[in-house]
Amino acid sequence: MPTSRREYTIEGLGVEERVWEELGEQETPSWYLHPLVGRQKREVHTNLIRRWARGQTFRRVLKTDLFEEAFGEDQLLPGLFPDAAFVCGMDEAFSTARRAAQRHPVLARGFAAMDVRRPAYRPGSFDLIVSTSTLDHFSARADFVTAIGALAALLAPGGLLILTLDNPWNPLFHPLRWFSRRGQAPFPIGYTPPIGQLRRDLEAEGLAIEAEDWLIHNPRGISTALFLMLARLLGARADRMIGGLLSAFSQLDRLPTRRLTACFQAVAARKPL
Image (cartoon, rainbow, N blue to C red; front, side, top):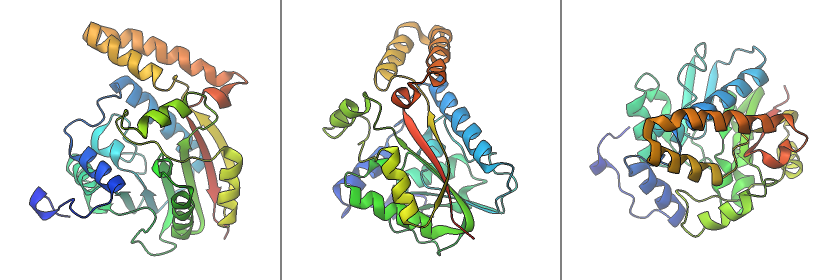
């Protein structure tokens, strides 16, 4: 993998590709995510993956997004699959893949920059694919469907896809997406289907749905602004208050309205043998 800025250029990239490349070049592109929120996100996703894996050992693992591994406290790959023979990570932005490799040199040989719609891996290469809020950044449904098909093709027979996406049933999702498409958010938020359509899209690629869930109930956008304000006003003293709020928000997962308050929807789908 090239290691210097001279060896790579963003000239000729499309608008959306340029956005992600420039985002990955920033020193702290995850500034909006408080460390406690990042750790909450990591814990929730780690528990979900382990629960849905049901003790199965995976030899070849792919994660479709390296932003967490490059910048945040919500990183998943380090330590999650210690028994895997090969752990891969892909990201559309070279700058993000490079930063992830620098941050995690033990995993660096498996990190690469590539488009999830056109992955360079051979079909049937992976026993497990984890795609955390990756496919919900495309502006068009056609790109989303293409990416679903590409991931399904990468699964080996019996392989498992764990997919998380923005939750369109959350009423705060839609104004946040509107603002993001106008450059008022750190990154663009794109198309995401409701859970019923998501099931149909996965089944159309020959995958069998095994489970679904709803993750993280912090009020979208509102909690981010609140935590940033508290951290700015109180510094490290805000951590206790933010931790208490995160604990309170997590109780929303117990209510019948959890499908409306969740930030993310999640699905596990398996490729038949």
